[in-house]
Length: 381
Image: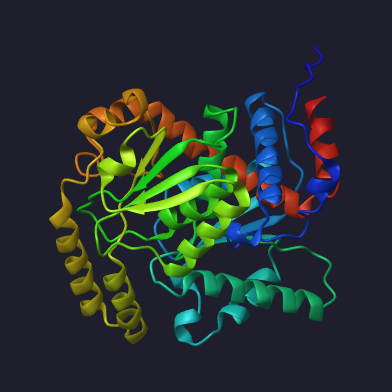
């Protein structure tokens, strides 16, 4: 029996083609129009995948992913995306590289890039290092390909760094566009710090959301206690993005103020900035005892703000008491969010997480596949 044709999101051939050869170090490197095109490609891949269509557009290619920090969802999304495209995913422990033995990031990039066709990297715990390392590795790969006249494209995809978490925030944007098909203009989104007793988490998720969502028209209210400020350059990029996209960014020191009449809430812990910077020096010295001490200091500082929890009382402050709850997962249940709120949101946050798979597929395919829009329409039948 012939399969029925699918209706895919409208894809502009030239707009999709303009993404060829692009890496994703940060959403701020792309225009808002380019990001919307990428999200449309991700929507197309989701429609094809849910209809059971095979999308093996990059057969027999190798997709490295280098992780310097722990991961569950992102590793799974990378492997699933690469496999659906016909690639061979390989997950590499960043600690197994020779970077700690004197090899530069550019040299590591060249060594891995000579054999791979795409590379994802997570390096998120040390401020000032992760994004710079990714860009240096990209430069090393580009230099090798040029020196050897190798025509391959080896895009770098940021799977979370110290500044941004593009695959997460783009997945969040995908989920928001599905839930609010009329657009994000005029929608209030609370991106709030929340208490966590587990570890000093990176700043990159709230920074990434603040930099991305106002560019898509959203009114983002960023809330945190004193001492948990985001990096100044990221906040400036967020304010510039708000001008570009017609959204806004406000910063408050009250979760309640952020939640009031919010359409969406995104309560998420991150570490105190001063302590996160102190970890940089300790890490460079290789002082593990100092790293442990700073981690404990961060948790003690977090514990002064146990009342920053997304519970039923806080949710009642939102628009009609029914805001969309979002989280990048895993959430600290009972600390960041009450068990009751999470129970109601369990399916929603799972669907939110699933979008990352299609964002990674879109990033890989749009960078590497010629005439991608036509190829996708062909797969739709």
